[in-house]
Length: 119
Image (cartoon, rainbow, N blue to C red; front, top):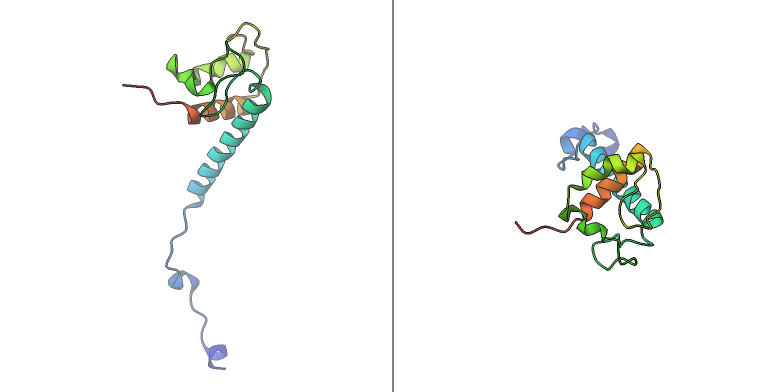
């Protein structure tokens, strides 16, 4: 019964662990979400021709694996082409247009899977 008579302790004083800042969690969540959306776009629009993961061969012989795109140029350079409707790549590549968020998500995903290049 003495516990009922005690003064409640201040939660901030008792807490030992420090929670991550909400901004940091929000930024990480946004990044992780973009990666997932970008991967989904790659799976639904690109995987019939391109290897979209960190391993494997492309199903289409003229389609470069996505993890090797940065061998020739920074992946971010694809932003404008994706916004205007990409028409480069292998000769039978279909044309498609993505929203600004989809472009950012796809490029973020592509950047996340790039193979390291020898210095």
